[in-house]
Amino acid sequence: MMRTPLEVADVFRDGEAGFLAEYGHTLSCEQRQVLRAVIRCRTAPRGGHVQQCDDCGHQRIQYNSCRNRHCPKCQAMARAAWLEKPESELLPVGYFHVVFTLPQVLGPLALQNKRVVYGLLFRAAAQTLLEVAAHPQHLGANIGCLMVLHTWGQNLMHHPHVHAIVTGGGLSADGSRWIHGKQSQRRKPFFAPGKILSRVFQGKFIDSLKRAFRSGELEFHGRLKSLGDEATFEQLLNKAVRHDWVVYAKRPFSSPACVLKYLARYTHRVAISNRRLVELRDGRVSFRDKDYADDQRSKVLPLSSSEFIRRFLMHTLPSGFVRIRYDGFLANRYRNERLETCRRLLGVPSGPTSTIPESQTPAENSDPPPSPNTCPACGRQSLAIIDAVPPERPLPFRPPHFLIRRTAASLGFDTS
Image 1 (tube, one colour):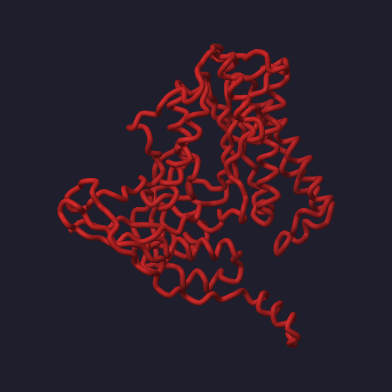
Image 2: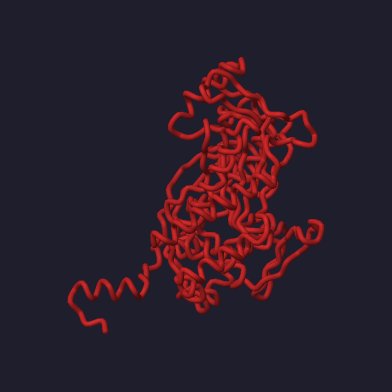
């Protein structure tokens, strides 16, 4: 008998009761939604439809997806749809992969102020790339960049960093010519050394964080409550800048198709994919982990189901927070016009510059997109919907205690 693949949802179901008993009082509304969505995704409570094969008559029930952006099962199809658009925006130039990482000492502050600190991380990274690239000593051009936020490491612990895909050249200040990067120099594959990028990035982020503190945008609770004092907050920042921050740029991609393959690894990725899970037994889950501190050796990391859920939900983003952003000449407002200018200056026709080979589309750390029309019995693309399956009655929503008290007080009840 073929074994059913292990899924993150299985771990969530296994450890939900213990996790809620220990950490339920600390969860945000977004984290509760993710927990519920992952557990119910493609199950009877969501409803669905009945499919029948036109060739062999096989029938199956296909339940609806949750479409939550943190769900491992839902991101493969979202990624495939999203990649169709960037393919048409690629130019026949070199592209670099640049990574900006926050120091570990600022991690707890970021966890309590995700919307503010992650937003500052994006802004500081973009400003660093654009200003350094625009300097005549380095490139002297307006580059284009696409940035993706990740907040996890291989072991699911908090590790906020931004992956940026950057053009190896850009538009001149007046937009009249394309300036090529110095990609032929082996000692200087990117337009600026990593140390310069690191120091500029560090300065911009710290300056923005200080302004956020002075304007009252940051919140401090629990163990971080003392950081509300300006002197204590300044001590934290001094500790954060004792060492250079990690910023590195890899060598240019060999072709636009490779850029797309690389993008598929980072856009719409969640903290861990189902294919990294190894075993779930007796309340403990094991998953594959690449240990960067040990020469990137592949290991198997065991955790309790409750701890696995805690680490996974740590990476839940605030509602409405955009984790894929564009800047430079790829900024949303003027993207189409500036891309047309770039193509004209580079002497290439409008539209896609290449098509990614089919063999390169799957990301190495993602779940393959499902084939909704493939019959599991005969393997033909011949499944058709013949009936609908109504959703089961959902569990009643239990609002947080503070919401109950607030509602009772508004109705005139004594909540003391």
